[in-house]
Length: 232
Image 1 (spheres, rainbow, N blue to C red):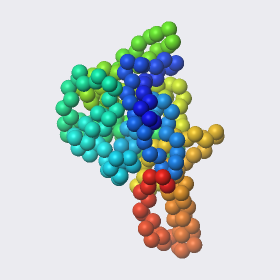
Image 2: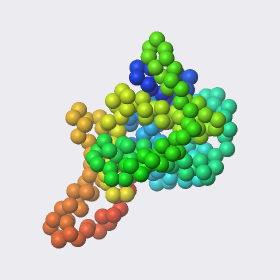
Image 3: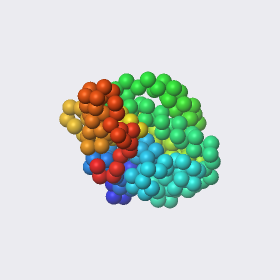
Image 4: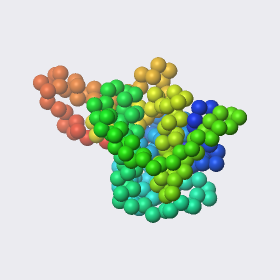
């Protein structure tokens, strides 16, 4: 994105007063980011491996890192809520992130760990305030919260819920590549996308399968190194 506002979706309505800004983000394989508010959810999930600012860094690794991630996406004039981020807040944000990843992973196939991740997601979401406001254009979600983290989680969870309502969520998938977990938006007509990038995870998975078939299960050298590279 280039400064485009990211609002909240609920049915046909959008939250303009609670819009957040999502800066441009690099996607592996030249993929196009998720549309609208779902792009913020995608960026939230993909904060585990940065491709834009600190290549490979977990952007939620420390309270300071999480604070910077939220600050880059805060709407103009934000800051009424408390701004202190603690190590407990980091754990809470990561629990929400991994719960959403598990939900998106289901869109690309079975996810054995989904139940545990969703339990942790629901526990981390306790206390996050989201109001439903009805307008002539339809309902919309308005996040609240006493702290900046609660407001941030409210925005992300409202956007995820809205995408589940309007059907766009099913196109948000998680790459099954080893050590990957990148959330990508499947723009294909038949929703057949599986990998974040065929030239990275997809190609390497095929190479490993070929070696296993032809060399009795031996792995190719460097087969575990499937971290993505921007632009691949």
